[in-house]
Image (cartoon, rainbow, N blue to C red; front, side, top):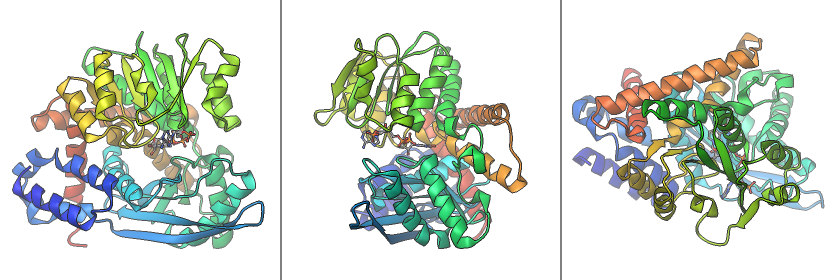
Length: 449
Ligand code: NDP
């Protein structure tokens, strides 16, 4: 790292010393953009990095709600409005007990790069709460969402900030949030949230977008190295929105997905995962993944029993971490490499820690980095916003084909940036560089604001 990068990193560490995930995300970017800063001195002169790292605004608020037994509960809500350089703040809401300011800031910081890569007019933001949706009734989820929106509504709008889903937030939660927003505002502002149900303004193919988009990006990446999904063994962590649709598209491309997981453990089915059953357990019943064995007794269930996720010990050609941050450590990476993995596709945000990424790169394992590879969800969210503005619907095929083109473009941009700056094949660096340049140029053009 050059002197400018060292100084910015030290300053960021000093100001945010209690935010490890945020610092990790910043460090990952700073470690890759030196070649651009060497050529473009104007970025340092305009304090581009200092401004990019500091969010425009952070909002935290109290979320009180009453559970089914009549007890008052209190959670903490967040919205980080990170950057409006390229459009309205845009990024999901996460409901998970692990949510804190560090998690939301790392997600928001990554979101501005991801959104820049889509080529669409969207800035970056992220939000959520430490509310745990697991085990809550529909009524409790609704009460929480209504209370959350009763504070959030004053900070968002279809031209200012447009939240969507993330971990723990799907069409059900978006519906409750939208209903409350509409009630408070007394107006139908369809584009204020994305990931809506298709019966009232949601886009076809939004549900599938992140998972399908990941596989479209990987198809291009594998193709550039004379590889494909055909005949490959794939393991996928998570069994949520991203994991399910990544599985669906990978199978369509001829792969055999042999393992999926949730936060309790993973299932291994050497005959190939029965995805309809996973959808029934996760999307309909909201149950635990070990229920899979009630139908497929040949499958194996391996419970998480410590620090390391058992799914990464299963031999695979391609691994798709689609659950959460830092789920692949150096230890997991070493096992995956020993077992012959050829490619990693980051469906989740920051699923590989920095040591794991470096180990994969040293061992010539292809990495499809999250900022580029999981941008399909937000890209289709932007397409949902444009449909809402036009008061019009595109067909599934139209949206899916736009998604495919966007993901192909993202791969090409990432690939080109990696070649232009002397790190061909390192798509982690390529994605960071391409997005950084776009943001930096917009920042200089808009003056010191
Ligand atoms: P879901 O809530 O639909 O699913 C999350 C899955 O990951 C569940 O199977 C969950 O298991 C598992 N999981 C969550 N937290 C943990 C944890 N701490 N340890 C182990 N497993 C965990 O979320 P999504 O599929 O929407 O999101 C998954 C990842 O993809 C996240 O990193 C998110 O930021 C990212 N992402 C999502 C996008 C989207 O459009 N939804 C867009 C871009 C990125 P369990 O049910 O047991 O909790």
